[in-house]
Image 1 (cartoon, rainbow, N blue to C red):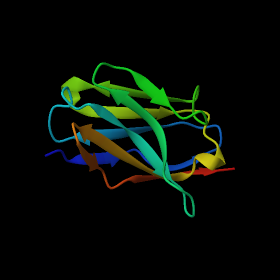
Image 2: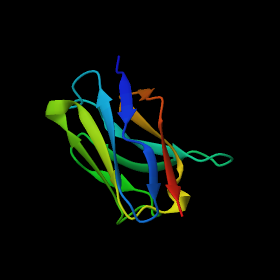
Image 3: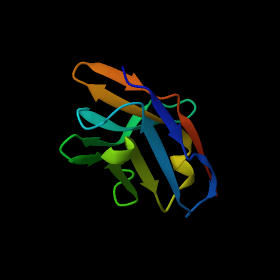
Image 4: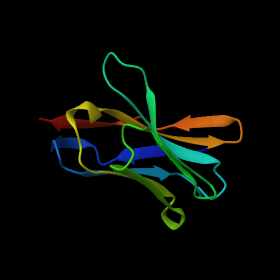
Length: 115
């Protein structure tokens, strides 16, 4: 029903910034929740941030104040602006969308932060 394609990952030095994009195949207006998870090697997947259809946002404590999630309904895209990056932010970041009881996932984009 919904295809998600992430982009924007890469290699960045500590203290730098990256913006991740998640483009959806259809309108995101009716999607209940969209957001980002991340998973580092050997660690559990964790929620980074999400945004609801009414614009409410939620952030993990570890990224609060450094990351900002936003959406552009006209472009069917959700963004994750990441600033003041730390080596511990290194992970594969995956976009997700929840439509009622169905979850959709992108394939992920790798973010590597060097010290």
